[in-house]
Length: 414
Ligand code: GTR
Image (cartoon, rainbow, N blue to C red):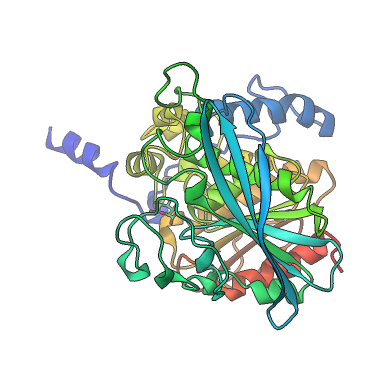
């Protein structure tokens, strides 16, 4: 009895010991659920990709129950003299209306002055647009925010105190100097990050007296991805942006989001997953660090309810995260880890990029050539790229230097 109880309890304790990673068969991305071999791009695009996409939609992220286009947009602020005249700034508010409800979110754009149509990185920020740069003109969002005393957020409201506090995570000047821009949005404007489906974008698509998404309908990550696609709708109209070179970026939960956005919207030219971990790049079946049970328990709203069927049940997953990454092929994909970020399972993130590679090879693209992890701070940069840097769960200048260099090469940016 005691041993059984111990075994029961142990499944909830995070494992950080490589020798305790369970043995499992990595599902073959090039074998259909009905055991048919995928031999070429046509088989992949016509059979395998759609069935995998359907699996991840119905069982992990949830489907979006309807269409919702931008009702109107407004360039609320614009200035031509930023970063000593090297850049311009725009703040564009997108509004959505349906079911008698309205929401809006604001895209903050920094664009290089000397480029006619600039390639851009797009990614959400955690604490408001005004945190990404020490720039007095950035509008502070009124949306709900998680309290964080050191950032001056005490009544779930963003404040002046946190202006620029996250500038270390956004190497904007490096992007500008490379001839690239940045588009960023506060994720809480699209859907506040809490287990409450009465706020954010979800209610606009409810039918009748629906109170929350159905089991196979969108959780918060799918909602945030939806927001990135609507931002893309806007970028396609912005004369200063090269919409064919928009790279979707995200860190941590927002890295899970950038992956799902890249999977579901092929207009994103490339995808960057920064320390995305469980439910992002990391293989779930390894159960290393954060697990499916843990994430569903701590953040019940991130994935759709059907994903809870796999809590402590990873063996049952017919597909793993490398197959999610493979859905980005043949577009460039960068997976990055941090050495101290064991919670996100760096090895699981690396292996996922490696096991996604056969799909890139179908397209004649180069991925991760071997299953041996590179040393720290030694990036592998092909169409599929990977690095593990020294340091903690974070976004650093080192990360951005790699992303910029790789994006320029992969997307032929001059
Ligand atoms: C952690 C969570 C991770 C990661 C991270 C973040 O608490 O367990 O999956 O998403 O939050 O987004 O900062």
